[in-house]
Image (cartoon, rainbow, N blue to C red; front, side):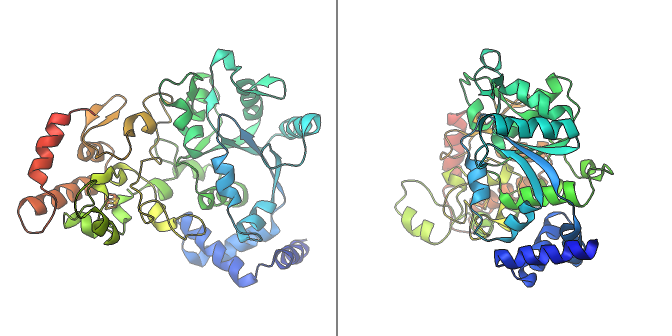
Length: 393
Ligand code: SF4
């Protein structure tokens, strides 16, 4: 039986134009994302090859479809596509061929059998009694309760599903919130794995699906031990962007790009640090610099944009006050960051609160170095006076 499955899988690889070598390489990168040694690649490959089709539902709520778009940006044919072919995604509104009654019947049939995984993209919209979003004649929140009722787990992909994201930005007329908060308020006990960022990184989604569906980590409960207090996989969200940023040397040397300065263009070309441009890398916990995006080609800071902090999660409180409200205007230097329950604090303090001692040290070190005149940098004393006057911007 296993042999048959392997032969079938080899045919699938060949049909997709994926070499066995590429497939094993990809399994190695999944192993790394799951915190295993790459030595486990053959085991992951074996699990993928012999797995029975696993049912999943991909539910679209208050969204821009950016996360679906992100998933679709894998080349065709591609190994992630092959892996996703092994999942029986019975409902994915944005991309499926089925429509109307037939599509809704897919949901009903999957729910009746139970034991499936639900992927939620987009925010849960509570406004107007849930009527802000209607799916198949029901409110979005009724639909979410139905699919959660017999689900083995929910994966909330993208910042909107995690804490409302952009949709929950002030004044939040749709009363958008995240899945974890909605479940907590409604006594729904299904485990939720949160994958914030805007949009979600497809590599993380595939790694979680492999972890949950193929490696049996949901069945034995071990996946839950890998999550932090925000329900995020620690391996993906365990270090700050700043920790792994290629511009960090410039931060330490006090070499910053400064808006409107005479040397702005030259400093951008030199790859100087973007902290003065509003970079939220020191307080944002994701492994974007390591995994990167679009087939690992690049990512925001490498492409010249300051990190806007979209990987920050506020899943337990959801709604207003999330990273969108706290981080805007994104391109101004972070003088003060508002966090619910903490109030206005400096990035270094946030680092301390969430355990980012390294970030605190680096900020102190970078600014301290420039202040002592050991390196050429921005006029930090002037900057400090400016920050003090700016208050909670
Ligand atoms: Fe990189 Fe931003 Fe940190 Fe500068 S502040 S080193 S650009 S993460």
